[in-house]
Length: 33
Image 1 (cartoon, rainbow, N blue to C red):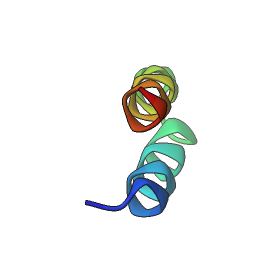
Image 2: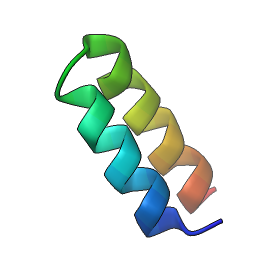
Image 3: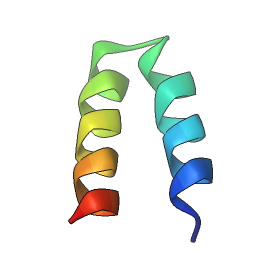
């Protein structure tokens, strides 16, 4: 699982929904943690 790919997906979803933006923040948190 690549962090870059996860971020790309999360960002793409975030552009459509606020929930996606939250998911993106969590995804980045997990990637860094």
